[in-house]
Every structure is written in C-alpha cells, then in structure tokens.
Length: 212
Image (cartoon, rainbow, N blue to C red; front, top):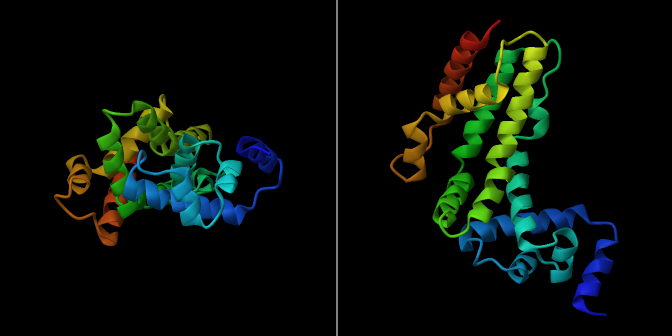
C-alpha cells in the first residue's frame, strides 16, 4: 500500500484525542522555534512521538496543522463558552473576565513570539499570516461580537455595530503603544494587578459608552 493510501485508510479510523493534542503541542513549539518554513511534518511527528501517518490522519497538511495549533492555543486561553451571556449574568463582571483573559493571551510569551514570527513572515507569505489572523484574532473578535450582540438583545447595551464595539473594547485593553512596546521588547508585559486595573477601567468606560 502506498503512503497516500495508508493515510486515507488511517483517516477512516477513530482519532485518538491524546495523540491529536500531542501533535498540536509539538507543532506549536516547533512553529515558534523554527518558523513555519523550517517546520516539517516529519519533525512534528518525531516531537510528538507519533508516526508521520498519524500526523496526516489528523491534519491533512501543514497549513491545516498550523491553523489548528493557533486555534487550539486560543481556545485554551479564551474558550468560546467564555463569550456565552445568559439572562441574569452581570455584563460588567463578564467584560472584566473576558478582558483579563484577553490581556493574558496577547501578552503571553508564546503569543508575543508567534506574533513576531507572523510579522517577519508578512511580506513573504500572506496566505500564512491570513491563516494566523483567522485562527487567532478573527476567532476572538467573532466571539466578542456574538457576546455583545446577545447583550444588545437582552437590552443591556445599545449597539448599532457589535463588531465595531468589540474592536473598541479590545483596543482599549491593548493600550495603544503599550502593546507595541511589548512586541518589540521595549517593556515588560503588564503584571496581574495592572491588567485587572486596566480591564476594570475599560469595562467602566465601555458600559458608559454603550449603556441603553
């Protein structure tokens, strides 16, 4: 049987979640240390302790693996249930919870390293940087947009443009030049107390701007 046939056959079998996670973890580490071009599926397989066929049975190609690795990292830091707003929930408390998680994600060491890699790749491979954006920032923005739309449905906010409001909230959290300074190594990421203070102030301003 050819390697391609073996891959097709493997895809028909139930997938092992533990192996999938091992592959994602290995891919994340290698993409960060070796870059996208310098990371091979063989290297990912060796790092994860699985066969190359197993890698292909979970992920059809390197682009899919990269997208899934970024998406998995975001899901670990900002799981989609975080954006679920139920009737009776405190909107301001949830904005604070989302804000703290968001700052923890964008200022985390892995996220900063990955964004630096993406900036270096931008002029060489627009398709890969687009994949990164869709798997990471766009995913988070979509979740926040749904959250704010739900808040408007419940009468908690007055919104004409939920996506614009989501961008406004995240923009306040990034702090303009502060996040750029972190990215280029001019300053350290904010500590836990500073993050909570910044998020609380952003949530207050957001509620004031969009309260019905």
